[in-house]
Length: 197
Image (cartoon, rainbow, N blue to C red; front, side, top):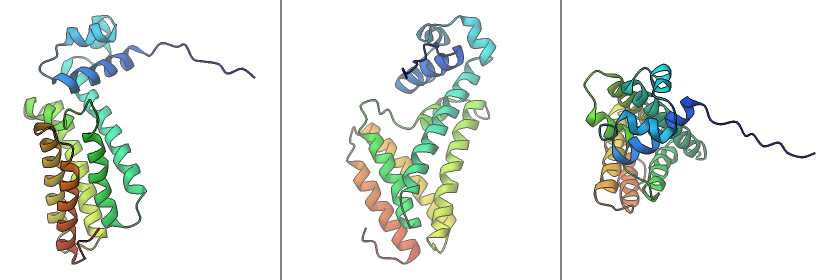
């Protein structure tokens, strides 16, 4: 039986999100105008407004898509490990693999959030991602037996954010090993376990 290949063209929504993902991540949300996204997507201007309503809604959808992809990547990495301690370290290892990508431009949420108006849809998306990260670290810290899971979750999120910024600003993917070592020490101190990984 011959296989059937789909020749269906991606929807206007899919093309707009793909163009937004490429352009917003590479160049920044404020640097890229709607007309460039529309041209890059190969859609009519009305398609953007009918689908998203405006640029802020498109940026929110772009960040929601990145959030889902990051959650999937990190959740898979965590699921491959047996203990909460190993799972926390898996988050840093997953992040570190992103640093080696030629298209790595830092954290999309930090970058977009820095450009966003307070209280808007973009800030909400950035806050939702950061909230998810903090909840993940805090939950795993509690499961690992940390004396103060909230404090360890906060420390690990701070380390995660800093590692991403350092990898971008210093053009140094080796920061991944440093951030993993620092996470190992923080986890050991908070749980009373050995720092050896």
